[in-house]
Length: 629
Image 1: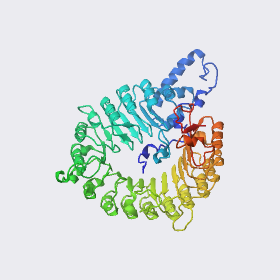
Image 2: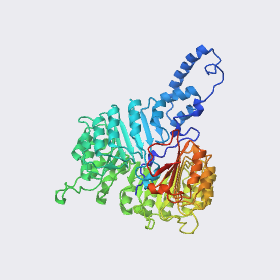
Image 3: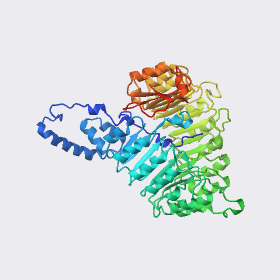
Image 4: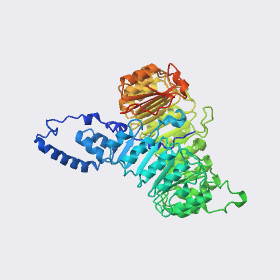
């Protein structure tokens, strides 16, 4: 199961008062802004001949002022003031965020923003992580590379999420931007070790190469050895998602040649013995470490294994370490080696480590400063109680299922959730997978953790009620939106009626992202949300009884939202067509699993609807299983 461990890039908190960030490339308000007065439109009452000079002075002043605006929300707001602000804001913006690669064309983006040095670009909707989007849907990086090569000679950083990236894209990116320094690929696909080899060989100033939850094809290419010889500028190297073997000698040489390296996350083919050698080189300066397998190498015969090493001493030297992850194929006997660094950790990720309560306790009792903790539910409720007893500074908790089947016996429950709420009052974000839950435990969390910003409770068995009272989970989720005044992201599950959605509409005034699965009674449920949540940006719905009436109730809201996803609901093709007709700046896509689905007369159970705002014409790269209304 894909755990979506890269959510840190999707937690973008756009202020609702500023224009939508993925439509910041156009502003009809700014372009059509009419100033008071006549002549040049300066509105100052001065002779027309002096207006260009005054405009130039104003632009120079604005140029200096806007340099201090770093928040994209502030910049979006500034661009709406008037034509001059719109123009100057564009030429002074160095960091560009595009929340949907189909919301604007590369040509339009590069024409307006001419001095971009950093680009963040997102592609597929999040449900692609759960196999709800067919392969080949789109989100290709190629047209962006071609445009950037011509427009952005000073581009240094590119962060991509859920994009389709080819080997040729990587090579062209490196060739066209000789000063390129930072590439982050989160949940991307389409490239392999051949493309990585070409990319790293050409980027002599590369500081960051982070491959996070991406699918990297094994082309039997030794990509690590293609980094340029000599001293490297590398500060961060993350490749824990790369499933192929690596050349450890080349990796060891690269680490030794990277005096500025602070972050290193290794894949499962790096053994604990090899980790020991790397820590002896760079351990004292590392702030982030992914341990690799945390076991002995499978490639070395048992009799030829390395002699027992003092792994604890290597970790003891890691005085700067604050973030620890990895443990891909963990051997519990080696866990005591990390005890020396636990007191300094602010982030610990055990989401790949199948450890139990007894193995966790001696580790967690040292983690008094822990703020972020990701773990498998194999630690059981007792493990969560141990976390609650020690980690008083905890801000984020994610508990993933070791067995995601609906009929599995979930080892965590309302007991663990209540323990966390009572022991970790500073909690701000939680993702909690379980098989059973109670309203009482969720209510307790709403009262004990009032600073919650993100609450995602995933009861894996669909339509599961409060397992003690048998009631729907309406009151629990109602308490969350009522008592947690800062809540911006919510995921609901279990047996829910329209009453739960009425609570969300009434109290969820700051909610920006809402995920719904197997919930609701009727169209009224969705209608409550669309009419009651003014800041809603992203709405994801699957397997719920919402149809055309619910869809059409949000016509006033859709231009303010980034997207709406609905799959296996009760929509019809006619309802989707009506939305597309009445809202021409929305793109409404109907997506089937294959071309035969597209021949159906109605949408109903077969198709998914993905609706997003765009300033462009509908995309031209839609595959056969996508119909754009």
